[in-house]
Length: 171
Image (cartoon, rainbow, N blue to C red; front, side, top):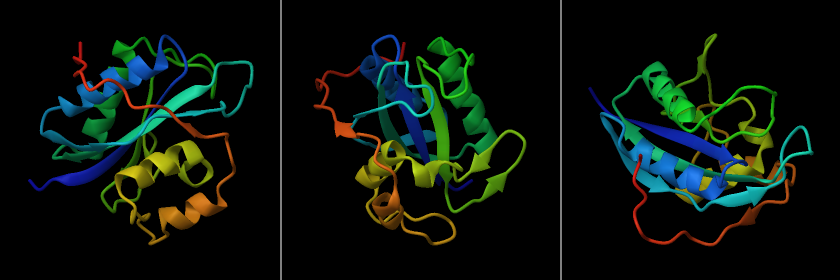
C-alpha cells in the first residue's frame, strides 16, 4: 500500500501545553506504518470560543502514513485520551487536541470525520503551522493555503521559542 501525506493539527492550553504537544509529536512519530516528515514551530494564540481560558499552544506535523483516514483518527483519539482529554465544552480548554486537517488530496465527509478540516480557512493557528511544513500546500480544490492565510482573521498568533533539542519520549 502506498503512503499518503497527512497533516495533523495539535493544540493544548492545559497541563504544560508545550510539553503536551512535544510528547504528542513523539507519539505521532511512533505510530505504526507512519513516518514523521516534519514538525512546525509551536505558536501561542488566543482561544477560539470562550475567552475565560488560557491561551493555546498550537502546531502541526506532516506524516506519511499507510493508515486509512479512520485508522489514523482512531490513533489520534487514543493519544488524546492518553493525555487526559475530556470533551466537556465545545471549544473549551483541553490537555490535547489532535485534528486530522488534510489527508492527501482526499475530501472526506462522514459522521466521524470531515477532511479537509472545515475550520481550517478560519484559523491562523492552523494555517501558519501548515505553511511552515509545506509552503505550497493547497486544499484538494486547489485553493492555496497562502491565499487563505492572507484572508484569515488574526488570533494574536505568536511563535514560541524552539524547545530543547533533547528528545521527548512518547510515554
